[in-house]
Amino acid sequence: DSKYGNWTFFSTAWYEKLFRNRSMMEALMNSLKLGVMSSLAAAILGTAGAVGMSKSHFRTMGLLENVSMVPLMIPEIILGMAYMTFFSLLSVPYGMVTLVIAHTTFCVPYIYIQVKARLEGMDPSIAEAALGARPLRMFFDITLPLIMPAVMSGTLLAFAMSMDDVIISMFLTDVNVNTLPIKIYTQLKTGVTPKTNALCALMFAFTLALGLLSLWISRNGKAVMAAGNGG
Image (tube, rainbow, N blue to C red):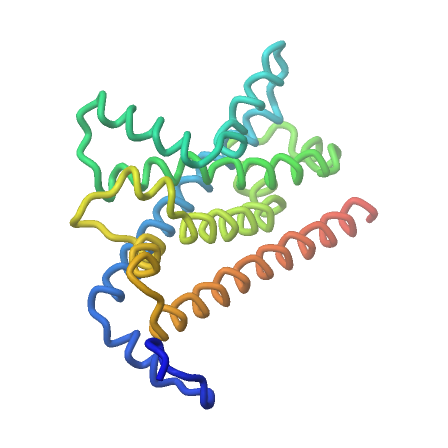
């Protein structure tokens, strides 16, 4: 018999064993907490940045926008080493805090791009109709509902990217904090088991579902905005 077993028929036995694995479930919970915290923080920062940049006009605005895209352009291994050096210089212990900060940083561009594009597609007459209203009330009553599909779409994409990250997380975690992608990677080095295959299948399905949901929200939001602008 093969070391990893032979295919006979579809079974949920390995999925059941997977969910009974305490270390695997602990890694899953760490990944979920990391993904939620970093994507929500990135949603706030990315949305605020996009709204602020859309209302600003200065010479170096283009340069500032390019700088905000740096985490998407730099290879992950270089970015991971930069984060590691930065936190080491500040004497910040590696763990969940460093992971959340790093993941938030590279997740911000995903929300920023979506929200910025949505703001550029807004009808200027919508904002003109609210002249005289306080900026904060105008944002929550008019701007935020219109850009919410872009915020949600970008946040889901950021969450999926955080859940999927291995390289950057390996530079910033310690023995007490293990994320699911790192857990899978270490198991692949020692040998692939049916339990690992079951976990990879679930992660692939989960990431695919998030990507499709993000795409659907984005397209649905664009359709609603196009209808509003046309009316």
